[in-house]
Amino acid sequence: MTTAMNIPKKLVIASRESALAMWQARHIQSRLQALYPQTVVEILGMTTTGDQILDSPLARIGGKGLFVKELEQALADGRADLAVHSMKDVPMHLPEGFVMAATGEREDPRDAFVSNHFTNLAALPAGSVVGTSSLRRQSQLQARFPHLKIESLRGNLQTRLRKLDEGQYAAIILAAAGLKRLGLEARIADLIDPDDSIPAVGQGALGIEISAARTDLLPVLAPLNHADTACCVEAERGMSRALAGSCTVPLGAYAEKRGDQIHIRGFVASVDGHEMLRESLIGSPHHPEQLGQQLAEKLVARGADKILAALAGQH
Image (cartoon, rainbow, N blue to C red; front, side, top):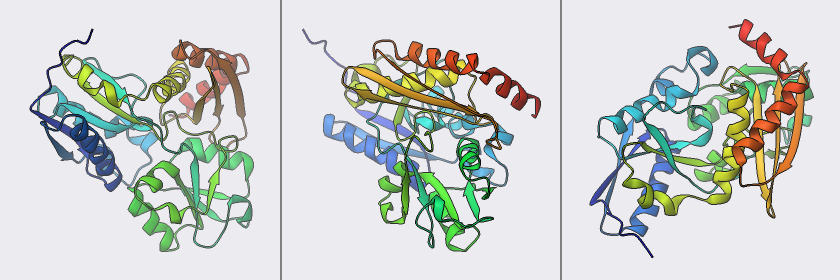
């Protein structure tokens, strides 16, 4: 028996205005228009605080929430019906009154090595400057290549590539998903294996957020949910949540569905990479959040809580 669904005459998607965010919003727009040809689907482009403050590391100015607050405000006051986010930008705890309605199928979750002169990280000479905005990438890079110099790199994708092309960096590390989505795959010199650079929680996946009051939208957005991706991202977020993960903590988690099981690996590190704890786990996809929590417990048993406490003391 199917329940009758009220298909809205119009849907408004809130999105950041960067090229990548707009690609993501248009992708969801086209999916919705294909599903509901009678519905008008519009995009409301917005500039967020995270897009405006570009001279400070994210960890220092308030973290990931800076990319979603304004979009959530648009949902709360009815200017938009749904917001599209990169799942890696979504804080581990959504504010009261908001829910994730769907998680889209994941693009390549790996980190990409981008350089005009070098083929991969191992080819970089000592003292080379590598740009990244992420403590997660920085700690893993420093652990593997202590002879490299890591410097902060903020701005949208085009800005980061321009800074590389101007010679400010020997190489930069970006999410492969964003480059591929924008047709910039040719810029990727090397894809870094997840074993060498564990991705950010939710990297490569899109999330669709709505106001919790808009239960009418849940069945409308349900066809956009990719069950395997949603399950893996929930496991990753479960680990991060249990460890109080934010931009100020170098941690990562990556889950894959293999057969009827989830394989998840994760790490916590000091910023300089001197202390690096990695763990992995295999479990059932039926309780992904719990699986992530169990992975967090394994890391804590090895001293992750001490690393996190030391990091907290630095802020």
